[in-house]
Image (cartoon, rainbow, N blue to C red; front, side, top):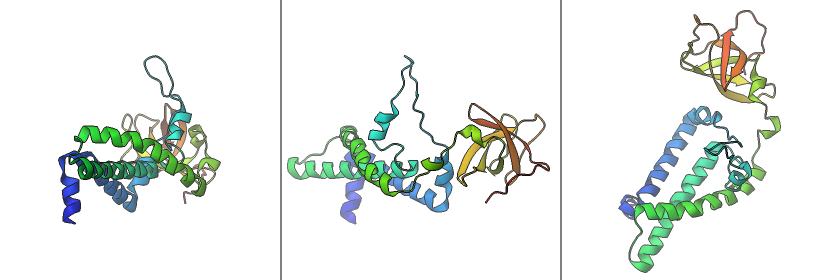
Length: 215
C-alpha cells in the first residue's frame, strides 16, 4: 500500500494519479445514477467544423473506439489505460534507467499509446455489448412526445433537463424551455415537446393532451 501511495504521489506520475481519481469519481456517479444524465446528451457530430470549414472524419474517431461503446464506458477505459500505461512506463524507466520522465513528457507518451489501445479494446467489446443504434432516432422525432423535468426549473431563457422516452422505449435526456413567455415548469412536471430549435426543445404544459405514460 505504501509503495502504491509513493508511486501515485511521485511528481512525474501526477497526470496518471489524476486520471485514476477521475475514474473513481465517474464510477461513483455511475453508482448513484448521475452519469447516465451527464453522458446521455454527449453525441458525436461527424461534421465538426474548424476555421477552414474542414470536417473531422467520424471514421477516424471510430479507430479510437469512439461511438463503439457507451461514452461513459469509453471514457473510463481511456483513463484507466492512460494511467496504467503511464505508470508502467515510468516504473520501467526508473528500474532500467534510474530516472522517470517529467510529468508532461510521460503524459504525452502515454496518450500516444492510449488512443490506439482504447480503440483496440473497444472493438471486441462493441461486438458483445448491446447497442442502442438499432433503435437510434433523429432528435426531431421526439417532437410531440411527453417529457418529464428531471433537473432544474424551466423558464424562458433558462432551460432545464427533461427525460423523454421514444417509441422504442429508449430514454433520452434533452434540454427544454417553455414556449410561452409567462410559463415555467418545475422538477417532476410533465410537458409536451412541440418543436426543436438548434438542439433546444420548446415545450408547453401538458394540459389534457392524451400522451403515453413514461415508464
